[in-house]
Length: 456
Figure 1: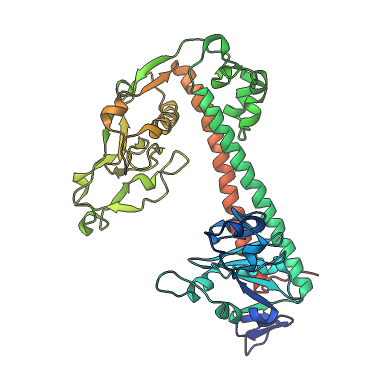
Figure 2: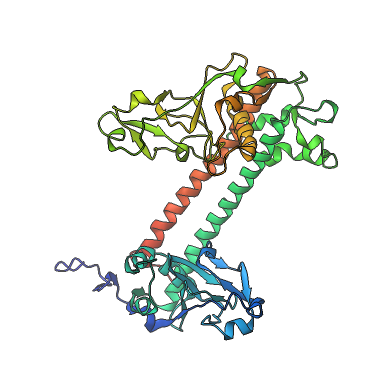
């Protein structure tokens, strides 16, 4: 360690901070070409529906770009400012949507919302993908424009980057790619299990059709109820296979130990309910925040996992609280206006907006978690037929007449246990997914600034 400069042996001070001795500081325009895009005349049919991929910024949603929503012809390419970009070009969105990054897996073109980087011999394209992706905030800072934000090719060319030797670039890219693959596999697993849980819920909550309904054996559900990990696909695989040919049977699935008929009950006869409220007019500062403010639940605060978000967008002031509706922890809510059918079991005390229905005092023969899942299924179905040309709404009078199918309390609890086990597994996987993303982000930052070195 140099006592005067506090710089470690093998490192140096640069315009980008402390970097390894072997690394350079270069401008993007010095190690590659920056190429813009364009749009052929949309009224000329000869320019469109060809074989050349043509991308817009909204299509950059993943690392590798394999296809585009629209394609252009060679004539369209020749008669516009669109350019044919080679494979492994780094696509950078630079208009309106700023700083999204992708890698071209084949020759393609883009519209004018891009300034794409074609790397020279000194750079590895995958390394540049990670390096430029980490510069999104810088891209946004450099953007300007009165109508929409944009970064010019000239500005992009002048951006400075730290550049390791090529072999080290390749090793860094290899390490980060392994992390990306692991994250991608976990994301696909979460999507698959979510889809399977949704299908399982649909079938378990559908009333049985006597002889056509297949049964789940106890051995198939014990893992779901007692084990820490449950595969919703394995849980129903044998039954799904047995009933593949019978579309009616596929609508319902039942535990073998239950044979009693299900009841039809009006929602209004199952529990008490009311809408939330908020003082008028909306938007006055005195209604929000301050000492003794409480969480205020609106539609946006109901998450996808049948829970509220950990923190509501707004808090309701002590002054406004008497004009709203207090909701205890472990109360079931549903959105009934706008985005109808978002259902949650509250995990903290709060107040609720008028766009929210509050369900309390369930009948003794109703399991609250079974009711939560049933309500979720019911409201998502009813949302499709909700009234309203601009803002869809379901009134209290309407949802009180909705019919819910109710099995015995024991069967309700069994259904709730299995679906809860599926949800717990999915939440565990989501937590692991977020941890992996956070760990990868931290490692990437240290790799890209040379704090962590790799052996080449």
